[in-house]
Image 1: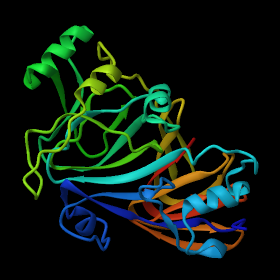
Image 2 (image 1 turned 90 degrees about the vertical axis):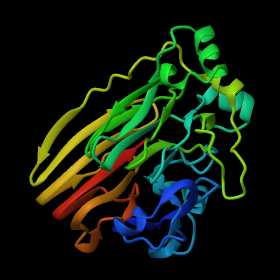
Image 3 (image 1 turned 60 degrees about the vertical axis):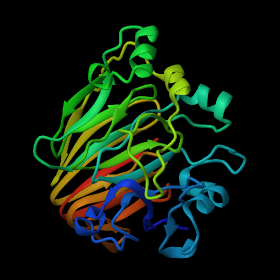
Length: 319
């Protein structure tokens, strides 16, 4: 099963108060409305599982594949763990709320779910001069609580300018927010737990403000903030430049830039692949599949060698 083909996936779209229409204009997706903030492009999470569009499991969800065909991911049948990762594309037509995510232990003990949320962002596009929130300036937990309680956001929040091609690693416990005018691809633990710290006092279509989670935010925020250090490496394989963006506890993420041909070997349990620019083809055991911007797939454990041909960029990840 899938020994010589990828598992292609259909995105699941999520409406957000800060969403827009760039998932249509930049990726040519048929989005449900002009407030579409997220495409969950590789997901087995119950809040938005991706559907498989080819092969013997066509019409099934990625969660079905994980639960019923563990061999595709080099897992044993009695492995009860949930699918570990989630990949999204986010269109921030407005500022996202300032938020923070818990770690695994807090998520298990307080929320009753297996995973916290460490994530990372690859900036796909960014308008001139845009910023995101990454971290804070409080030196102690008491100072953090005081700044939050008194709404001293300009004093508390650390802002960073970004541009297309930037990479940001966001461990659990990091206060953060994606700014207006940024489109990112996010690779994260498969978790949907978000604690809102600040939402600009804005209201939804019904005139209601969104819930904040101030006490839990204080509990899980890392104080003082420290920028995560990531070691990036690069290697060339024929026409493929492979840049390792991050290798950490929960995931490893790469940026691949293809200009020509490359013969590749897969030595991981499985690979998650998103085409973020250009067009290419992948060939496995003589069988070729066309790839274009906005295509997302998994290379399952049965695939050991493959060839890439074309001019394209990819974000690739594995646990």
